[in-house]
Image 1 (tube, helix red, strand yellow):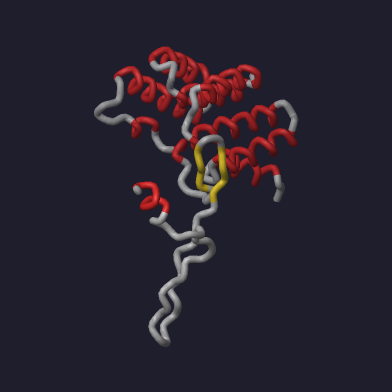
Image 2 (spheres, helix red, strand yellow):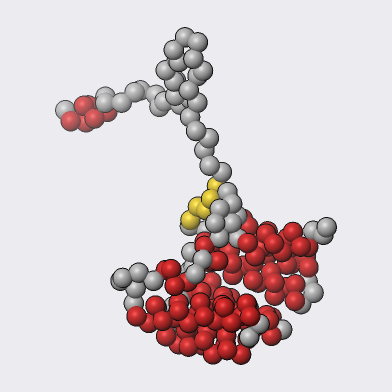
Length: 192
């Protein structure tokens, strides 16, 4: 008896097609649903393809909250200081800070990506790639994954492989359209 009841509960044919909308009042414009966002599928996550804010450019110390592990907090502070040193052009101090950050929290993605930038500033694409591989192995957020791919594009550029660099930058933008590194590089490579 229960089987008959369950089998008879739904429509005999599945509902397909557009769901009819209630007509608008006479003279009023029809109500349209908001447009659906466009997505780019990346791995197990779906990432918005719309450009937004590149969170990799935000201060790393802003990620420290009350329940952040002490080692992770120190690693983020060191990495932020190292980022400032790189902006000033001081790679030796940046390496000291980044090595300390990685020692304190080897599972933190940001220090590896920033140290890869430092290696590129020193002209070592191979060592930069080694750090980028470590960062990607830690399964970073889409924003940091895009940054790692974009920095890999910079490594290709350093080696003189412009085609691979452009492909990496495009891949980075497909992961996160907000990635500033890839956007700026593509603008620069496309010429005036």
